[in-house]
Length: 472
Ligand code: FAD
Image (tube, rainbow, N blue to C red; front, side):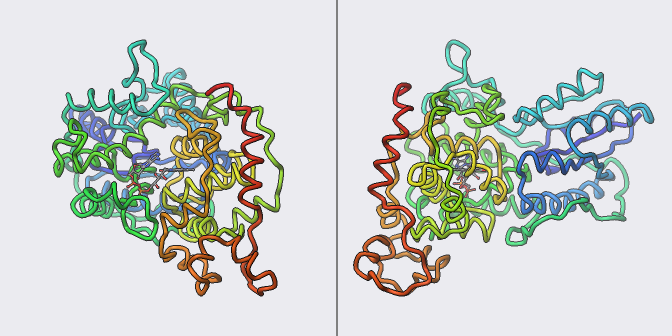
């Protein structure tokens, strides 16, 4: 019989409880341990997984293959079209070989949960560990045993529970046999994008984490909103596919700021809260499964009369709205596969409020481009921005792209980097593109004039989104 470790989102050997448990069983029962990753191209397509993220996954699988080979464990790539096929695949394996156990980390998304449930019901010996969050979904609830609908009390309860626990990440298992040589690299059957701007490997992610915590975490609160600064960790692509675990992030943070869980004034507190936002959205996804199926968290969201304006949507996607801050952000996304959080809020607000285009379309565009694409955080961020979400920004709070631009990119250095057409404009006009149109009616420029007038768009949004009012 063989013990299997099935890698899905936790593409790492250290602090991997599923791997740890699988290695322990293999060692104790003297059974061979095999590692598996299953590619599911049709499912990826249905879930809008971006080709850049697929490339990042593929590169990490190759790193993982090397790390596992050093432990004497072979990593195999299996193929099937979608999650239905996954069940057949495992069942046919089980008919051919004796499977002692399969270990894997649980995933919070509905199709993934259903896939695992079906395998268990079909009699496969699947053992799931909870490691995509620090505290497992369902364990941070209010006095009635329900999931919180607002972040602040969730964060408070989360800290109470966490401060009573130890967070010692588990080490990579010791080798189970002599090191293996890797014959064939892992290569997906579908074309992947380019993620080379991001270094691959668990070691890289750990180094990034350590450097961020040592050099930037204390200033995070002051710097995190300025896209021109290196003020945030850039760990999201690694966290999204589990190259690093949230527990490793917390343990590293607590090593530097031991009081961060209990002291509101700790310099580590602000970054901690972001790690917990990540958990909040994952817990929500599991508490409200219809979020995975595209539901508005606030059912009144279904009554919003969104505009079907393909031209405006294309301009937004391609960074041609005539608002330099919005366009710089969209070009950063399209070019690098990542966008700064402040800009995600600005562009999502612009699409859903200024252009009145359905948040689902923006969510899908982001997902296809993002290297850190993650259903829970992406859905949570989009619904927060649109005003339809859990603990969302109220529908009547509409980001003003001009003031956001002035406040968060004051010298326009970020904008100038991504929108060269405006590089030589006076600062005031970069932040206030409408003033340029008025002042230079006949000016020739290859940069578009704003596709909507801010004040008119604001009024329109306030009117159409007022259907959400009843719930507030
Ligand atoms: P840091 O500021 O260093 O934060 C550390 C980690 O905490 C991040 O890596 C991330 O895992 C988590 N985190 C931080 N902020 C949030 C947040 N608001 N919600 C959930 N988790 C958070 N994040 C994703 O990981 N994937 C997405 O697909 C995604 N889509 C988003 C869409 C919209 C419209 C919005 C407004 C936000 C979205 N976010 C998403 C959240 C956030 O923008 C990114 O996590 C963050 O910009 C990543 O940069 P960082 O790693 O430097 O973060």
